[in-house]
Image (tube, rainbow, N blue to C red):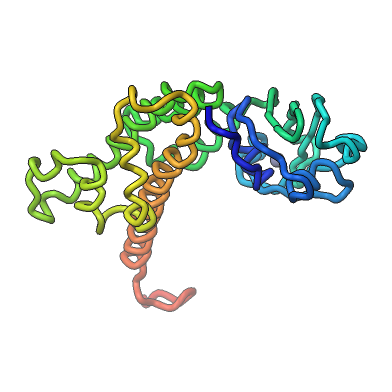
Length: 270
Ligand SMILES: [Zn+2]
């Protein structure tokens, strides 16, 4: 099993990391100081109760005075973060710290509940067909440490989104179906003008989506989860902006059509 990665972002750890994923804390690092010192820490994340992005504060229940024996410490510690909009909106975590290796071993509400609500709130208008239910399954499985199952659903959603971009533009670009019967990296290259730039620039990592399940173990799939989900979110973000633009255009056309050219409050000619 691979060495745990060094924990660099407490926000990612608390808001996006599945339970039981191990991270290494380094002495004097920002996440460690944030957990153990009295300084107030602000974290940006989705508030399930507000139903939108918010800022949270980690405060009050500091993890004791363990700094002296932090290198040999073995303990379960509780942490609460509170929404700055309404302080009763809170997320609670139980952390296991063993010789500077940290794991989330419990949290309420669950990561799946938060992530599913966030995805539904933000992308419901552009998640079509099976994409919503399968993305929902991918998030839920990853939150419970089921990397391989999650990977399979993420791949299905990703492939469907890539395919729908191809279908949308093939007539305009004069492509035929055979051109799309290639590796994922090559598909992304072909669609380069119709996909988020960042995704095209980083297409090599999406080659991972093409790997056979037998080539990946559960941990590798869990480590890929965040990147895999983000690649889907980037496409959905673009769909969302496109949809908003069309709505704005149609609203503007209606306003223009309604405009009769007379100044407001003008007395009608008799
Ligand atoms: Zn809130």
